[in-house]
Length: 461
Image (cartoon, rainbow, N blue to C red):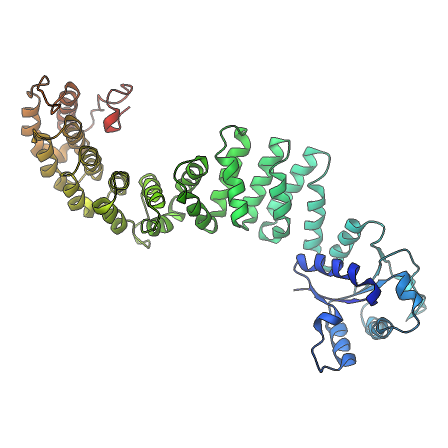
């Protein structure tokens, strides 16, 4: 970290505090006597050490400093000039700053030169320009960030876009620009907003307000498409650091922010999966359901990853409510782990909707062990026609692995579709016929697909 010693008179404390805080915001360590002197320390020794070890000496001159005959600043200047004489003349170290309109003193610095020979920063004329000049010498990267931040408010949209792009290319070194880039997300120009989102994603510094702001754009159907896409990409690029804030948005049931958070977590894929697996144990039901639904899309943590989503999903399947258990069944099916088959087979005994979800999940897993329990559902006259049809669809999804189910399916083709009680339906018979074809020839495409909403109860459209 760059170390700067600031010399001044106490009449200018407010301005010097402003200067010091600005430099600190750019990760520059500032030595101001009243802040850094320890009780009992010898003033002259501490000041000499701070001056000689500092990377830069900033002397703040003002009308007030020149009017006084005796000040500690004068002694600091004496020590600094001694140090300056020992340093190479082609390297900046002593930086005069004018806090208000005044003339530099004509103190000699050797070799026929005075303090007036050193270019001063006229901070009183243009604060931002003065800070820019200081930073460009003290910390060139910080100076560039400051310059680009100023350009974010340029009249030209193209200039604002270039500044945002440049800040993004600096990565985490441009952290200081994050608040200004967040403000730029409200720019009138949608391309500027997109550039700001890209830059925020590239910088990668995250907090809750930033995540909420990007989510607000991502989930806003009324927002122009271009900034929405870039806001979503920014969150995905930030990655795992944004996940806790995204999970927090799942606590509210419903709403576009929750949907946007779920979409973003799904787009993150494996990066978010461990946190989603852990979220299955959340105290909030809405979080558990959303985590299961996202895991159904991503497939959960990769083999060898930690933690596994399987235990949490199985617990949800067994003890979850009417929304949780079906979501868990769907996620288990997409996870594709045969270890879930016993739990899913047990769920086939449950209500109609959960039974259907569990049957379809077994079909997705694709393991022959799922065939017997699916045959049981298909043949159960006490079941409603929807789960019985789901069992037929699942057997078809198993392909040749479901060969042992052919007798039961051939038998089911003859079931009476006019039977009372809702235990069978023409659509069930169609699902059975489709399953028979796909088991006999797994390369045969399903006849249930692309039929509108006729088979939507089985997830076929």
